[in-house]
Amino acid sequence: MAQITIIGNGNMARSLAVRMLAARHSVQILGRSTEKTRELVESLGAGAQGGAEGAAVEGGIIFLAVPYSEAIKTVQIYGDTLDGRVVVDISNPVDFATFDHLVTPAGSSAAEQVALHASTGASVVKAFNTCFAKPLESGVVSGIPLDVFIAGDSEDAKLKVSAVVAASGLRPIDAGPLRRARELEGIMLLIMGLQVGTAHENFNWDTSLNLLP
Ligand SMILES: NC(=O)c1ccc[n+]([C@@H]2O[C@H](COP(=O)([O-])OP(=O)(O)OC[C@H]3O[C@@H](n4cnc5c(N)ncnc54)[C@H](OP(=O)(O)O)[C@@H]3O)[C@@H](O)[C@H]2O)c1
Image (cartoon, rainbow, N blue to C red; front, side, top):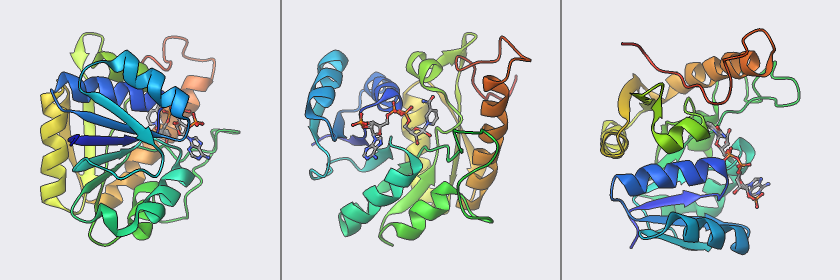
C-alpha cells in the first residue's frame, strides 16, 4: 500500500512525487490519462505506482494535484473513502485569463471550499500552493530549502503534513487554521500577477515564496 496518493499527473504531481520519494515514501499516482500516468510513474522509478482516476486511494495523505474546480469534484467523488485521511489542497484558484482576481466565493478560500465538499471524516489541509513546480522538484531556491506554508484546523493533520515536508528536505511552516488559506491563496494571486508582468524579469516561475533568513 502506498503511503502517499497524488491525484493528477501534471507538473505538480511530478514535483510532489519527486519530493515524497526523496522522503522514502511510496507514492500512488491516479490520473485520468492512463498513458500519461504510466509515463510519469516510469520516469519516477522505484517507489511509484500508478492507477486510473477514481481508483481506490491507498495513501493516508492525499494530494489534490488538479485544478481547483476539479479538487472539489474529486473529494465529492471519493466521499467517505477519504475519512481518516489527510487531504491536501495545493490549488491556486486564480482567474488565469486576467491574473486579476481569485475565483473563490468572497470570504472563503479554495481549501475551505474543498473542506465544505469533503466528507466530514477527512482532514483538509492547505499546503504547497506557494511552491512552484520547478523549484519544488529540486527542493531548493537559490540553494535554500523551500518553505511550505501549512494551514488547517486539525493539529494532527498538520503535524502529519509537516513530517513529510521535513522528511522531503523542505521547511514546514504552520500558518494557522484553514481560513489562513485565504491569505496563502491571495499572496499567490499577487505573486503570479507580478510574474506574468514585465517589470521584474528575474521574478518568474523559477522563484519561490520563502521567509529569509
Ligand atoms: N504549476 C505550479 O507551479 C503550481 C504551483 C502551486 C500550485 N499549483 C496548483 O497545482 C494544481 C495542479 O497544477 P499543475 O501545474 O500540476 O497543472 P497541470 O500540469 O496542468 O496538471 C493538471 C492535472 O489535473 C488534471 N486535470 C486538469 N483538468 C482536469 C479536469 N477537467 N478533470 C480532471 N482532471 C483534470 C490533468 O489531467 P490531464 O493531463 O488529463 O488534463 C493533470 O493531471 C493546480 O490546482 C494549481 O493551481 C500549481
